Amino acid sequence: MKLLEPSQKPEPLRIFPVVVEIPVQWGDQDAYQHVNNVISLRWFETARIAYFQHSLIQDLEADGMAPILAQACCNFRQQVKYPDTVLSACRISRVGGKSLTMDHAIYSLEQQLIVSDGTCITVMFDYNKNESMMVIDQVQQMIETMEARVD
Image (tube, rainbow, N blue to C red; front, side, top):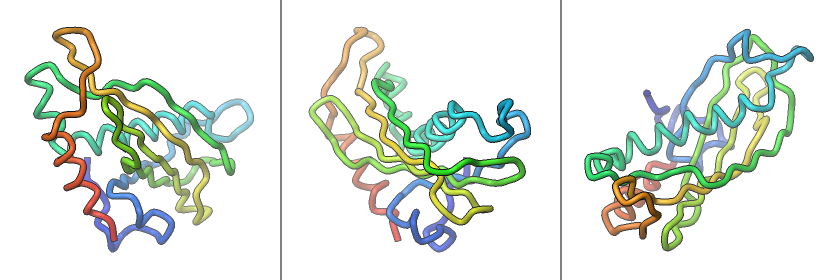
């Protein structure tokens, strides 16, 4: 998945190192003819996965280590309707002993504003041992490299 370059980001998203463009699909709408609430969480997921893919955290997967979603919170600010394109953005705002807090924002190109935002907490997880693990130095360095991609 291609990330937007800093110069391509609208002003409200310049604080986010990861911004991906996602076209709104007709099937994303519900019976009320606006994008269903669950879709915002899917867009959060798209940016979150892009963050991990581009930060090389996926390199740890060979050893059975990867972040796992523990909590998601979404604030719905404005309705989104088809046709539109959104920009899904994320950044890591806090590194805990075992967890990473990610801030998310969804920006509508049609409306030119943030239509939803929220946070997700992921926990570093050792899938071989089936237990949470500490955020290792290698992960901290990857995060610092990614977070430096802001404008």
